[in-house]
Image 1 (cartoon, rainbow, N blue to C red):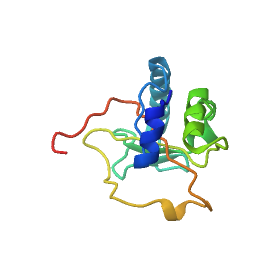
Image 2 (image 1 turned 90 degrees about the vertical axis):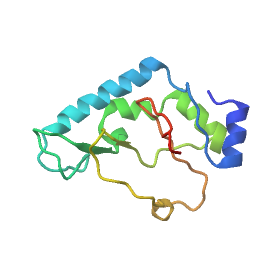
Image 3 (image 1 turned 135 degrees about the vertical axis):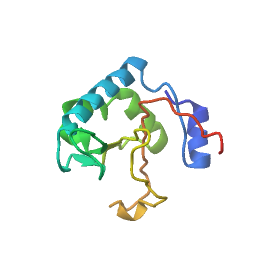
Length: 148
């Protein structure tokens, strides 16, 4: 759960990294369900509204780039975006009115993938205020690059 230190860091920096929001078995289940979806998408020969593929993708050499709006297409993710620990954390940061606008699973397999250049999404958000945020849930361990 978020601590007072996390909340203060968010308000000071505009972002916060918090570990332990989800149990390891919950992350394992996220990985398992995501892996099943990747296997399903591997057989595709062209992208769909749900599955975005790398230009190099073939069923023989699958390269799935993104799963769009999983909370709208799959019951598991519909439930996950309502996880009590997630909702509690969001309410501590932005207040009681929490809703999902968008969701996606970005896949970054090693040695495959189109670059995502630095960009700004703000102009595409249909909001009249800035009481919203982006949540990232990492399914794999991440480390800082030694050069940064």
